[in-house]
Image (tube, rainbow, N blue to C red; front, side):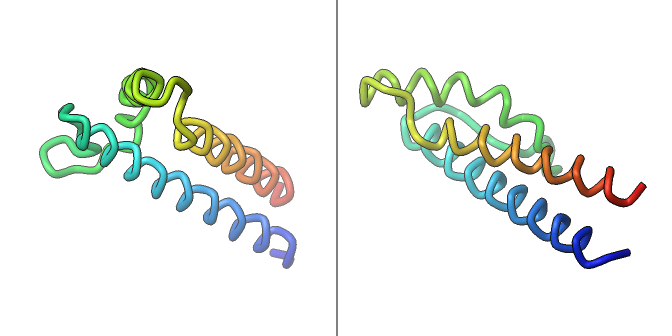
Length: 94
């Protein structure tokens, strides 16, 4: 495995950690507005659950500030960048 693949992998990991941090911030925001939200089902972490809370975050932030909150865009940017670097790394390995 060459160095460029390792660097691409580290960058992809950075984006997924950023995405996870944004997900936690979105859940905290939703909870602070009195809504019930969790990324866990019976104690097991479910990453896909955040996609059901994104429309709620968008609605709440739009109602409060008159515009969609930055976390919404940061979530999608980090997720798309993670996928791009993951695909690039997989292409480089094969």
